[in-house]
Image 1 (cartoon, protein in one colour):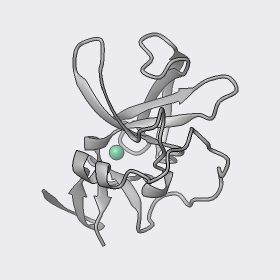
Image 2: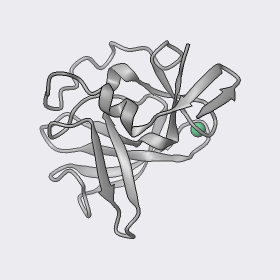
Image 3: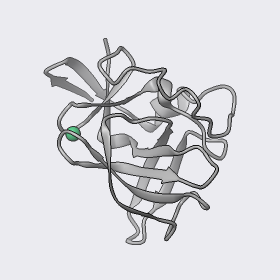
Length: 146
Ligand SMILES: [Zn+2]
């Protein structure tokens, strides 16, 4: 599916794309290059599907528990397909973090919203002594093709 936006052509991130882009090597959550990547606008940038604001980039994809993509139902039974990202400069956190219903115990989660349009894009995970990461709902992100 193609979407024409102000910044060119976009495609929806499919599970398949996600699968094929899964890194070859598993690595634990390591976020030690916090200033390595610029905020959005690059060739590998991923954008908010709703407002096309830059959110994160393909370089930020990482594996948590050995996988980049995870599917989880929330307490209401809605299944979310999320990808794990080290940084998401286009996200703002909302609410206090909690470990209740956490999909990645012992990580506590809080909401991650698009900074530009406040759409719920996923969750921010943090735990004492561990590197934090974002779990972003993949079908709420789009990718620039060229
Ligand atoms: Zn947005």
